[in-house]
Image 1 (tube, rainbow, N blue to C red):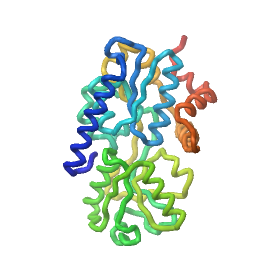
Image 2: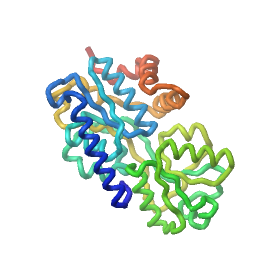
Image 3: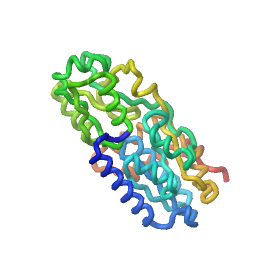
Image 4: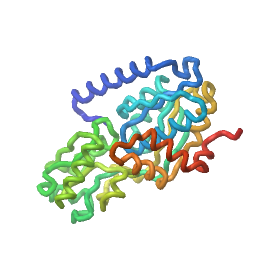
Length: 293
């Protein structure tokens, strides 16, 4: 799922080591005997930010002290697999995080989907006249030969590298960046009615803001959709049974997630404050995640 360059790989390995060091010194984990401390890790995608902060707020309402740390996708999986973090609610399966899951599935516990109906692929504004990835090469100049991507550790980036090969997109380069730089580039292009192709995924607020479309993927490189799963470390059920119960029952709809994501888009807003407000406004949904008293 990572860039194939040695430099990128080396930097990621260093990043993983630094993250694990931070996790290891952030306080006693529940694995170390304090069942009221929970550590969550997540990637800084709009969906993961929304889900993680909602889960953090719910766990804290039940008396837990929760640390939530943004990391790369590789570090997220490694932290839970090693027991340095307790859980994540941002595992895109079966396609996007497939290789991470393959390497760690015997070291983690998959609690199943907390969100159903994800999709990844190449996205263009609706005014772009092509409809399929296999049409890109013929129009490379109109796209300035660029596919605007996100962080190199994201699963969609490795899939897009495969797309470049499988569709023989010789005149295209995959541009690394972040979710924020990708949407900024998309915004600029749409404002100027220019052609642009970006790595996109659902759920994401950009589909509510602009008229966009996925390019068809005849070779199915991006898969046919999937879910966002909750992954916890082994032993969490014994160490923190209430936290485990909440994580196991956490599930929400696209409408609910999009509501929080849209709240987070407002200038100056705080995702954690928004999460607490959403919880206050949706007691019936949240009650389904909590153990009966």
